Length: 320
Ligand code: ADP
Ligand code: MG
Image 1 (cartoon, rainbow, N blue to C red):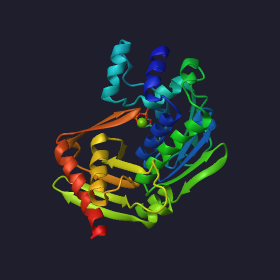
Image 2 (spheres, helix red, strand yellow):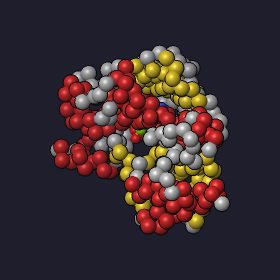
Image 3 (cartoon, rainbow, N blue to C red):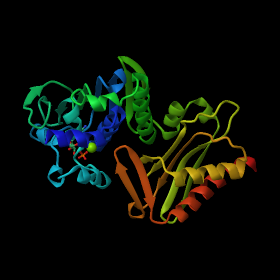
Image 4 (cartoon, rainbow, N blue to C red):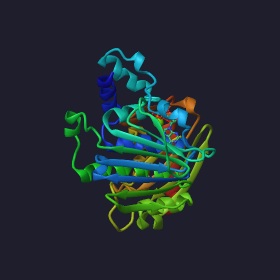
């Protein structure tokens, strides 16, 4: 059972940044408006995420750490296929099988916080803490040295974690985020407008030269900011695309945007952008595999054309 948990964990939490992503999504699911991410040694030593969300009732704490679907998993083969169905209710249990986890939480009605340490078999004890939840993950892969060996340098793992925070923070300007690494505050973003958040995260070059767009056609809406090439160096990591609020890295969408830039601006510069495509969830299959986010559109041609034309029209205003 423990072994199966650890193998599953390798899929769900292949590196510290995957833990950060799962914990941030949980905090947002809990309605948090303020989230603090504290990392030590690239997240390998420690990932502690504190939110001011609705919290977890003390009697629910063991359940939060329990795995929900293990009975379906009979072999490694099955395990691989569970991945394509999503890991609902698997994240915390998986993390707890490969790291030391402490959850401290206080709900609005409670006189004080409660905590649970270790796993779903841990005991729930009174604790102190503000309203909301802190999930503290220490010594990732301490019990699976083979897995730990695959981790890269502290700086590389930290970079991946910071990237996950940036992606999520860009899509949620209505939530305040702060990020510290080894005790140093790296980023802090207050609640504000999308325009301001994207300027903070992508820098002043982006803020000074970007077009706002918001186009709809039938069930499709594309909105956000398309950066313009500027004199200074374009950044390779400034391309953000979201589908129904989730960050995706999708060939079809990247191609549609790139083609629009080439069509209007002709250069091979590929500036920063933050674009969100919203559509009826029935028209898209977002396969939320923990390590990669793939999308499959019911009508990919229509989506490609729509995105291409929306970006093209926005850019064409400048060259007119
Ligand atoms: P899932 O998110 O798929 O339900 P997880 O293992 O990520 O599974 O989390 C298990 C459960 O623990 C969640 O469904 C939620 O009820 C609770 N939970 C986890 N993190 C938080 C949090 N930060 N605030 C409130 N509840 C949480
Ligand atoms: Mg979750």
